[in-house]
Length: 144
Length: 414
Image (cartoon, rainbow over the protein chains, first blue to last red):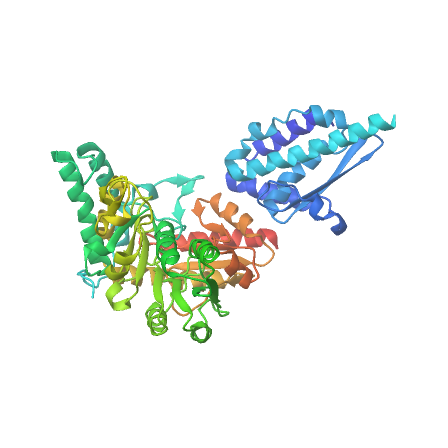
């Protein structure tokens, strides 16, 4: 699935919640619960995303030219939020991640149900993931 | 005693609610439940009308104008001082200084009194229950003067360890500064005893009344405190104003805190003489509109009667404590026998941010986090709590809504 297709799928899922904030919060927490577990060893200070009020750990790897992220958070809602990004970006190439235009947040009205502070934290997660993509791209260019 | 003439009666909360327009709205599709009163309380129509009335009718700079509007504004501003004197039973209006609120009041005392009268190895005692605003100003004074900060420990139930306090007091103690009630836990401290012990040791006593102004009868003469601080916005009044009460003899000998207009008598390039109390401490154009409206907030409290308010809020706290503590995994933080209407708690396995967000999605406003009391949170070994804090307009039905919201999230997470 391309980044665009995953964004469309997420938008559609959230549209089923009919703008009900409580249901959106529960849905996010549910998505967070489904996020594959991050190995405890990866939850290092270096992997903490700066700029989030909750604690968010994120690390990435590249396999056969495709990026794989693992993530976790100490709060359930934020874990749900980061799970959306993991779903969108996992299996994509560094170039696709770097060029991605994330529109689903506006389309589902995310800021309305998570507030400005968490939205800022969400921006920090995206930035961190793009930095990973940039590092992998650079590494691939050096190696080739 | 203060002149609190309100007769003991059961308050008509529905009638009170009608005076708070903000309460009658839907948030996220449900009736708003406002339980963040320890952060700031909502404002009754009398206060809102007073603000509008001031700007529509008699906005003018005070004290030096000779025109009619300036007269009117000055009179209204000084009427608030008069009401404030009555509200806390100060001896004189000269002992009432308008500030931006408790934070500025504490900074004023720490800076003016602290820098003038503290020296190396003098000791300042605060408590483990303090808000950062009653910690950091004293740390700054310690850095400037070489004085040392001592902290009264907190017992497991959130009350102060009075035995430890007695041991901390010594001839080196110069200042004791504690809150009347804790913003994080609600504990009402035995300030009268704390003040008497401070005086016996030769120290001055400063009381942060941020959490008591709207909830407890305050009589500064009976308490015999040297300083008492209030914030208007936590007392149904406007934001951006509050007061510092200080005993006249202390205020007289303290140097000015800020300099500018109003606080001077005569200025020449060679020497300036300072104005009399309380103006010595009110440099520049004050927050006239909010001070004017603050009077209406104090009158609102006096009319209801602080004892009546306390009775209502105590009933809410008792009910909320009973219902919330019965929920699975809940740990109450702060169970001292004497409390204002603050219920702080955590739920095992659920982060307080998630609880706060979840409750917000149901229109319920609570506070989550460390409540500007990081050392206290450390003492309870938590990162933060969920805090529901009550005011006179809250109801048991709203507590039921809180419990229902908590049940939903607890059931979901298990």
